[in-house]
Image (cartoon, rainbow, N blue to C red):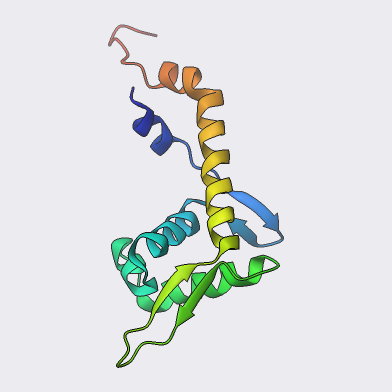
Length: 121
């Protein structure tokens, strides 16, 4: 089993407070904003509505002591969004924690997903 497959089998969700989670969806949205420079484009990549993407950005910006995403209004000048330094740091730490968790359980994940013979039992 390849490393990418292992990463996709394990989902890390961090409970930061009552009803406040940071998980793969929010991390993917942050990564999409980093890569596209746009909240709406990042949301589209995830098959997420524009409204939902903005709701998550507002939630993310309220979770920490400083905003994670900086957005400039659209219109004639275009607009766009980017991750703040705090946003890049949060995303990097989340990805690093996820990778560490996957590495810690990789042997067991491979065992659980090993092909089984039909006569096992």
